[in-house]
Amino acid sequence: MIKKLYIVIIFIFGVYNTSYSNENCNEYKKLSVNFMKCKANTTKKKAMSFGTNFIKDTKNFQNKEWSQEKEKVNDIKKKIIKE
Image (cartoon, rainbow, N blue to C red; front, side, top):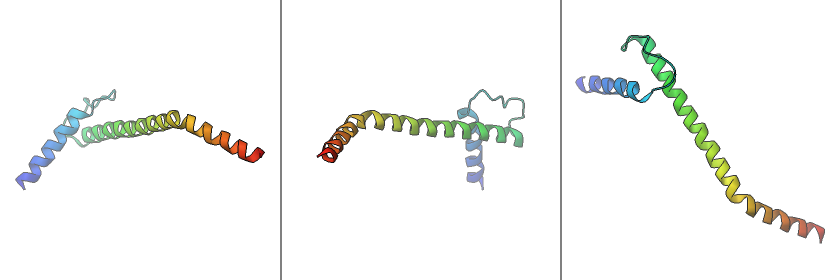
């Protein structure tokens, strides 16, 4: 039981310390339900934005790296079709 309590406390302070954003959650008391909802939403928003940025960066990198090879393949296709 004590271990579970420690885990919950560590989780609460971990979320509080890692989820800084423009949204102001300081208007709520630190152990209130509304404060936890506010912090959970800011953490969720940051995780979602990180995921979408990672996907966009990966797609851009792949397009940049494979653009020359794609052109070569298209040139070969054109040569085969013309003959």
